[in-house]
Image (cartoon, rainbow, N blue to C red):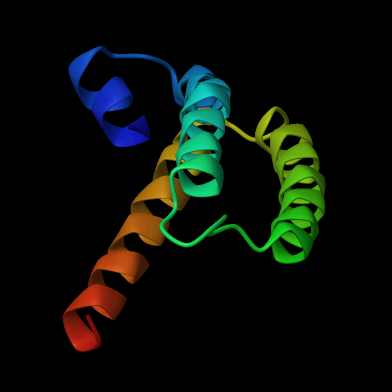
Length: 95
């Protein structure tokens, strides 16, 4: 979502990051409800694990947003590019 916003719509990197995080909220809620209530044989959500991931994600999002707001735009773009490249290589090596 972030690379497309930056490349196609020319959204500044910081705003693209923020918009992506905001978009995740309703998407996640929808997924949670489906997995919890429409799962075959009962809920498919490990609530304890989900809470641990939520706390870690919130801390990471807070610290990342604070750091991102202090970095020059070019560093943010390069950071996203490096992250995408690493994930791509990982997927190619062990899908």
